[in-house]
Length: 241
Image 1 (cartoon, rainbow, N blue to C red):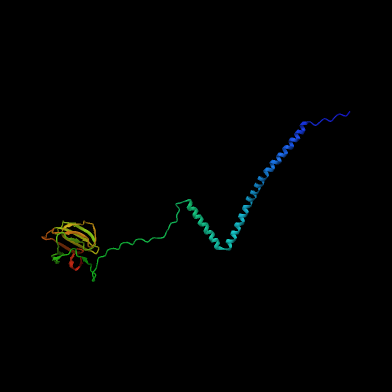
Image 2: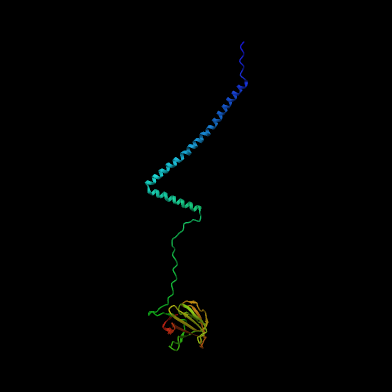
């Protein structure tokens, strides 16, 4: 009697079914992952194609610029403008400086001595009044004008105070002014002096108040004009108050 074929172990059949089940699960997992893998490939193709499109656009732009110089200049100006804007944004202290020269204020004109028709300088009267003693060579070196005490004594012309005091015998309170034209004017017998040595004075400026200091017995102003060191007749040079 033939021996019976041994039956296939039950464990092998179970292992085959388990392997088949695992294969099915792997297929399902692969099917689920397929769309995501396809998307990644599409993105890769787009990324790879981008440089080519940029190169193509750049070539077209260069071709257009070569055929149109104005377009080239416009593009260059635009680039420069963007660079300036970028630099300014990065550094707020960078600003456009206006180098246009501004007009300067003209200097004040220098004062000039008034001259008469014959070219002689004209001085203003230092005070209004009656001449009580005139000029005489070797006698009176100036003129004496009768004025009320306290009358304002005015500078005959622009100049610098060379002396202000009462140290010269007989003159009382005396003021000497040196003028740019080489003349010197003297104002004596004042009751009060309003300037000091070294002061710059203007024509018509009050420099003293009249009085009767010195060797006089009534209020008056002794006025002299000297051209250098030589006394001259003031009435020849006086124009008006």
